[in-house]
Image (cartoon, rainbow, N blue to C red; front, side, top):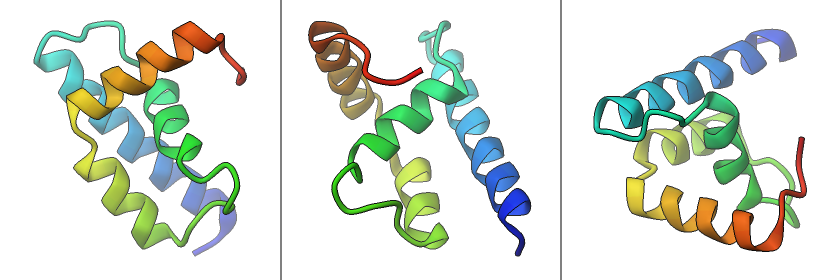
Length: 80
């Protein structure tokens, strides 16, 4: 799988998870929000293999996401 294909696959997964959250009432969630939440976990370690990222995106729960967003809003955004 090429790097661009991998990026597209991750983006699609993030969009899918964002859509799932919008369906349950979190209407302003974007795929970038999902990516920032997942990737923040790996700031010091570097990005893990694709299977690990896939599992993390698919298993992301609303409470973990909302905790991340609350902490991010409190600290200020460090990513754009």
